[in-house]
Image (tube, rainbow, N blue to C red):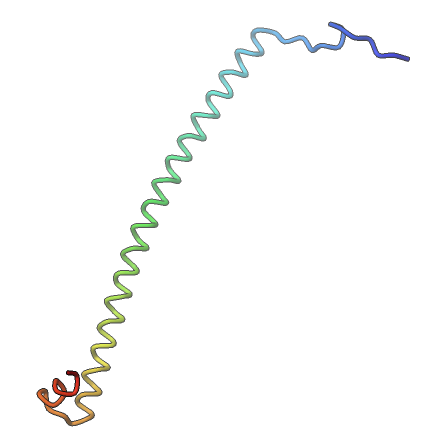
Length: 88
């Protein structure tokens, strides 16, 4: 049996229903936009924190290497001039 075609199968859309849906979608878009802005701000702060943490870690590593070199120089018993001559 063939299906009937035409306006019988179309859903009826009321103007009030469409207006309510438009308002609901616009509200949802505004909420999502605000959430995206908040997440971008959070991401920016996290990137700044990572840069600072990397900088502190690099400084700490340099200080540790410096302390190790000074300890090795003291242990070797060489004078400052002797160490400088070896480095040249």
